[in-house]
Length: 440
Image (cartoon, rainbow, N blue to C red; front, side):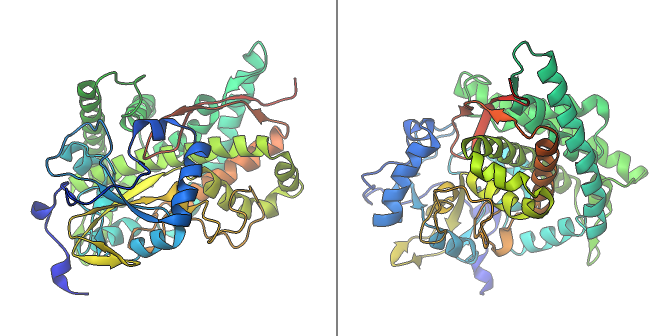
């Protein structure tokens, strides 16, 4: 790998593409496309995977920030092409952003941390962060996860008993609570600040939801306020841990050192925002989509509950594949290159469609069926491997396993109603979903 592949941030731009390059007749960039159901979108993805897996698309419509000379992006819809892009970081870099939309650069810088970095800085920073996720730290966290899983199922059962008809919102009373409690415990966030932090996390992932912000100006202000709040909270906690380190992850990040280098306050703050947003939302979506899948496929649920301890391992992988909580990630071409015969120009955006890759029948047999016993399961729910494979993948697995083990033991007949979705081209968001923990 040549050193001139990697660029300083000053050279990065959101401009992309050739104005004379024709767009594909299938448009993946309209709001109507992302406002449709996942099943409807999959019909479109299936055509592209089969006929033209790499297509040139127009920019996403009605973006928060309009960027001059942004003419579009390459859409990568197959499993094999997504894996290839992910494992060619010298050609396809993560900076300046991993979002298909253009967001304010200050928000991106404050919230994306290592997922929007490239070597050599990414290499050094990931080593520092990984040193805080030691096996000992993970074992301590796993004990907390099991305790919190019992806690949130207690809450769900209590809310159902208080309900007139036995139905309760699964997202607010269970799915969102587990990752919130776990990350707050991991980071050592004081009890008095936990709910406010959770509210700001929710706002930071809801920039397409008119319930949170009616106009583009409101949305930009909301995003700024969210990252400022989270960085201010991080700064406060960093100073406390420097003076009095504890057993929490914040202390580990403050003290982490590799080759004599430590994380800066801004780097810790950005990782804190990344962990609290991505860690909360992806786990919440996996759990919510997972319960709906167990409701829709009762034969699969029956197979799972016959031997929960021994079958949860493969079930977790299939739940993550089925949910695909992250819909897209973006890369940017570092130089002129080729992807399966398609000529890509330096600076072009390349968007990876995980929701399509996880339904690719050429990579995953019977991809449109839920199979909790599926093994091997080459899903890309945690990324396609390479240098950006999800650092928190074991944390996510622990949480999904613990929650469904607790839930299906204590509420084996729980059913979900129809979910209310939040339109998004980044997260696969279940905003609300009724559930009934016990038979009527």
